[in-house]
Image 1 (cartoon, rainbow, N blue to C red):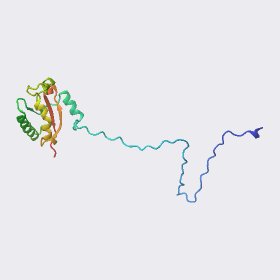
Image 2 (spheres, rainbow, N blue to C red):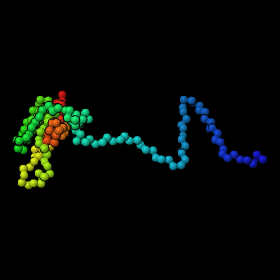
Image 3 (cartoon, rainbow, N blue to C red):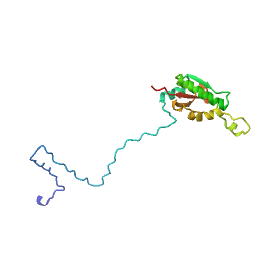
Image 4 (cartoon, rainbow, N blue to C red):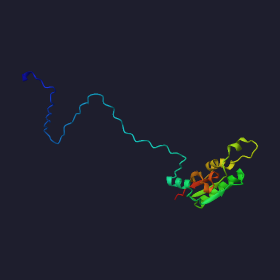
Length: 173
């Protein structure tokens, strides 16, 4: 009765390894193609670095924490209250030049509070916050713009919304 029984699966016998005449030459191993659907090989690409945010300006987290908590003391204060735009611009240029010459690291620029919406809507009233509105263009046009590492809003103990910190770069070499 066992003559009619067939095995369900044939066992694969191990293949004999070929014997080479020269044992220093390794045989080329040919891999069989896998059966079924094979996902394509994905190339591993490193994650691209995010573009540098220009509002960060190269300050490390320690600087920002100290500025937010009001722990960074300004080395010098430049007060532009009571100036017209023209005299404030000249005072700003001279104060920045002197601060850089003296090796100041944190310059507190007191400009006055930014304009209120109600003041902007009134046509006859004097424009509030004119100096504050021009500071960015003065910095950009300054011959010392490359020496300014960052501009941040001041802590309330140093003037709050009416003042700015100018963090100046250290002189090189």
